[in-house]
Amino acid sequence: MISLLSAFFASFITTLLIIRFKHLHGKFSGDHDHLGPQKFHIGSVPRIGGISIAIGILAAILASLQANGAASLKVTLLLCAIPTFAIGLTEDLTKKIGVKTRLLFTAFAAGLAVHLLNASIIRLDIWGIDYLLNIPFMAIVFTIFAITGLANAYNIIDGFNGLSSMVGIITLLGLAYVSFLLQDSTMLSLSLIMVGAILGFFIWNYPRGLIFLGDGGAYLIGFWIATLSVLLIARHPTISPWFALLINAYPIIETLFTIYRRKIHQGKSPGLPDGIHFHTLIYRRILNPAAVKNNFDLLNANARTAPYLWLLSSFAVVPAILWWQSTLILITITLVFTASYVWLYTKIVRFKTPRWMHPL
Image (tube, rainbow, N blue to C red):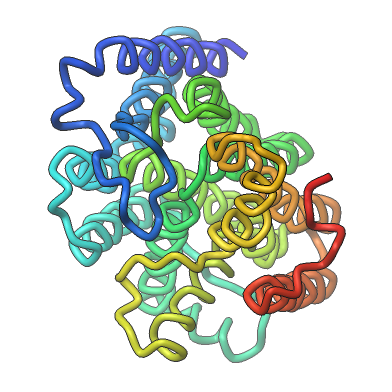
């Protein structure tokens, strides 16, 4: 509890100071581009909310060290996260770091986690694939790929106020719940530390968008969640490896579908931004028209977008924590969730949005 509160208050105060003194750093930290396909804000807004989350985590770990005398795993995880946070923050400040460079630094951070934390995926409970994962090199490569991919996925879904951050909180609470059931106090603490750090930022980000998460924050959250997901499976063989996949299903499927859409369907580079993510379609096809029709401001429409995806994410997280031991059930729900995502996306993109999705 001390760690959670330390993370929250340190993040909350840091975010307040960033917003209060944005006139001093706005030239570098502000998101001045309002015309991009993924831009839905008015005016320059600081996009360095990741600093608040990083300081919140640091404060919590320092409090943990002081209270418990030792927290080597927590310190190591924080050190492993530095490369991906640093390259993301550099992009937030310079706007000149390409996707490949960010992914390379994140892969390096994932490699550190595999080496220093022994966080490695060695099974998927699928015959044949498990045989390959028993080869150390294959397990290392697959784990680095998985952690890097999920870290990048949180950056992809970071499109509206409160979206990526609350999805992260929902997922972390799921990880914390299973850690509690297994009496793993370290994993429980690491999950709640990040929850506290995100909440300190979230209060200022949602609903009015006074500050943005930025690449640094999104990559940090995604990396932290990905590493905890892998560690929890590695530390507890009773957990199905599909628990880690289902609890992160929304950002994973959004990323895979984005790659398919850009590379296969559009013939474009997967690294290029576009304006037809699931969350973007909800805003443009459902909430933006409703805003015009009902005469409420577009900032309100922006804030109304995230809850749709919070609910969608919960439809994966809740079953994951209920059936965390059963591979068969988790695989079945993953397939149903994927099919539902594709069905909803197709309906919305074809202007056939189900009536129950329209705002009252």
